[in-house]
Length: 206
Length: 172
Image 1 (spheres, each protein chain N blue to C red):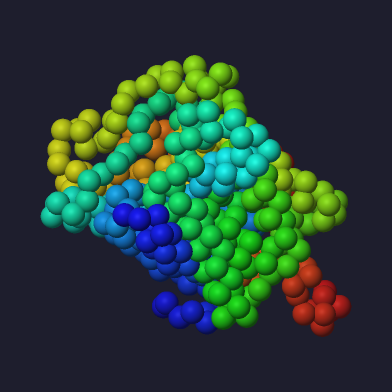
Image 2: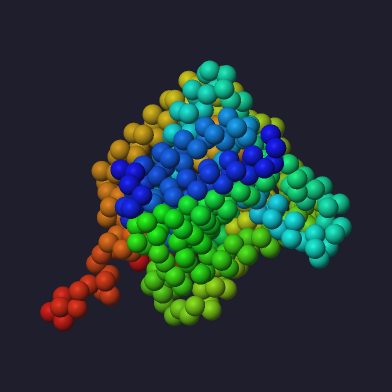
């Protein structure tokens, strides 16, 4: 495929991706941080729905020979160390590498600093990779391990079972904590009962 | 359910749309959704102006050309565009920093928040590159492919994230 066509497809897919991130309100730092505090779960619900949908979609595509999976290699040291550093960064920034772009689109100024910081982070990695980080990156390497191969069943069988478990969990989670309440009246992940969102009359009566 | 003028969709509707994007990603591009390697493509391209020898680093070289790399750069540019259109159609444009930060951090100035955002962004993408994926590459796409490495990376991400969020911020 030519680079030009790939860029057009990327832009179109990105626009849909960006709309979904904005409508799902993970473009709000508050939604992301509250998820990490485990006090509200809008991000987890959206994330797990995307995973479950992906499991079903890929089961069908693999079943009909329309897609070849490309799982990442299992590198225990890199996955644990890198994943933990990523988690700390997400909480400080209030964004993920993808959602920060939705934050920029909605107009948040701090997200521009997050993005520029991210570019420097990528550059730092690029310069450190060959010399400093190689030993960490390659320790505990097990190749492209996947759960279906580990269990010894076809991908669709394991994927669809796992998707069903996720759906069951989400039904329970929604019952315990409904999403409209988590998003809040201003759609920014802040709850209705906080003092300055109260009408003035209510505050003076209190 | 999918109204473009709504301020928010249920997280299930939004998640469904993102999951369905795996179809064109695998069908047209032969890869899964991801965003963090685009940071390498963009930063290495820009760094070339200052340090032309960066192309001699294999990691930079393999991110600088090819349809997959520039597809992902276009994807993240498209995210900005889509979120911009979506927020204007629903009348929820934002500016400055979210009021959330003042509540979660107490003493709060815009300069302090911008500095935190920069540092957080740096740590976030550095970690994502070490782990070879982020919330989309390892999370949404890796787990959907049942990759063991992605289960490990996402567990580490949420584990460290949960500890950090409860240590450094007030509950809002």
